[in-house]
Image 1 (cartoon, one colour):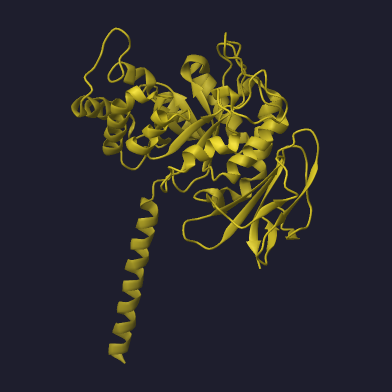
Image 2 (cartoon, rainbow, N blue to C red; image 1 turned 120 degrees about the vertical axis):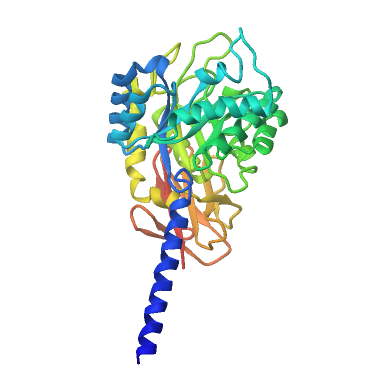
Length: 396
């Protein structure tokens, strides 16, 4: 009897130890991988210090948004504290410091060596690593292929200096040289600009004219997502217009922004950010645009109950199709790794009128709306307003 008691006690202790190990393993997963992020891109050049940071953090928090990419200095400790107090995670973009220690600022150049990259990384990381609001680093903004050596070296140096946090930069373009940066430099996250709308874009035309490309919004994202290799995908969506000579963007409408949000989910985005928070140069910032800010807030609040589910979902080639076939009808399938559970995203890309879109498949299944709980049969019409979308779990 005593032996049995000791055996049971021993098994209980083993169970506790294993549970503790599993808990530690789960805790060891970098938080940028298991959190769905919604936030904005901002810069202290236009943010107005701690006052502006506090206003932004409060407005984001009120809309159930949880992150911001901010170009700032490592010495801006008060900004980290403001973000921490508001529950906002910061992706620190140390552009000003890296210009003076790695990229060069026009007056001074620095050697393109592992030693110099390590020195630059350790100096910056050492100054901010203890900040609780720090989620990661955004080190470069739309680099060209001629910078591949520097991009790879500084990425690796930051990953070595702070291996638990995200290390990435903003990527742009479809040419092989620029996309080679994602493949060879191996940032922790693939973060891409996605700006479809120019002054010439008709309502609901998602052709990537903002990048002088004939690719559609969806195809552009897929040109990068094919290189994910298990890494998270973050998208930086357009909410701004510009009035520069030769490059005139227009603000998206609310329905266009709504459709971009839903299609980003359908493409497996683990984070959605918006450019730019503050009004600056020739654009109006999201913080000064009540209509688009309301649209972003509505979307964030609407998907709040399922954000924990969204992180880690990847688009796969599924068996579900839109019916009738129409360029305005978007359907995608999502899955998490080898997990057999599937999700379907349906979007009405028509930004001017509502549409009935059905999902069909050769297999037997039904679709349960993750937000409303309603179950649809395959082939049953799903009524969607302009630019609106739904996400479903595939059920028997």
